[in-house]
Image 1 (tube, one colour):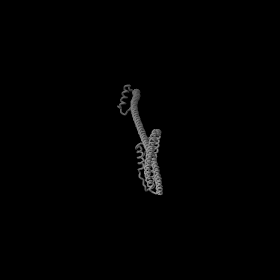
Image 2: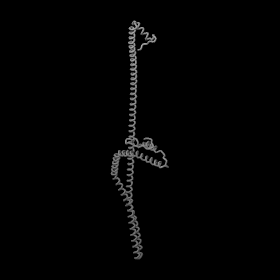
Image 3: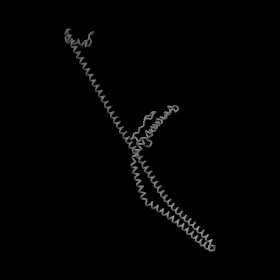
Image 4: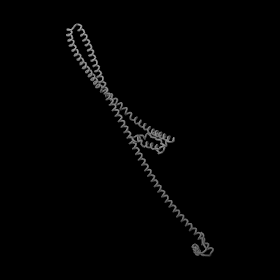
Length: 341
């Protein structure tokens, strides 16, 4: 990522994901984006306002460029654990069903016991009401006997009136007793129903709590697995990066050593070549000098022989005299004379 006034295109490859989508793994990208929009354009100009809008849009595009591969990486992680999640859910559902089937006789027995208890309570209430009714009837009977005795002392009309009133009172009491018994039966049935419903609600609440606890446990296991996979992938990536860096450093060091070795060999070869060239040049110089001197000696000898022959032939000198004269000429002992070689 280059430091420019424009945000560079962010590209995250799939193989980079395990090392980036970890705690604070994206901090360098955020710092880069933050640094890239740190300028403060002049809002008093249209150009400055447009620049602010452009920077904000760039932040949004950069966010999407980092978020999209992250979502895809997370999707791959979820797909990787989905078979395990499905198998766990199948197992849990089967166990829940087996648990409910296993407990069903006990649940039905408990419900039956509650129903029996409610029926027993209703029966006891009925007996209580019947006892109260019998007591009331006994009171009425005694009252009727008293009324009868009194009626004997009263006239027939008074007896009729009393009988009618007693009958009406008995009818009303009977209606009240029936209403009380009916209400007691209804209350008992309602109470039994409420207790059964409460037991079912408690069972449902316990089941919901157990299911929620199981979901929380599965979620914790999934999170732990994802964290473990991410940590293992990061450790593996770090190990690969370290191995790659070590290998690269080793290759670089080997290449550097090979280059230095080759350079030393080439330098030694150049040194030997230069020494050989100097030796050959010196040998050539010596040979050329020797050849030159030999040629000069031969040339001087030819000229000297010619001079000696000329002196003996034209000057009437003996050979020894001619040689001595040549030596005098060579040593420049005779003024105004010289030998041209």
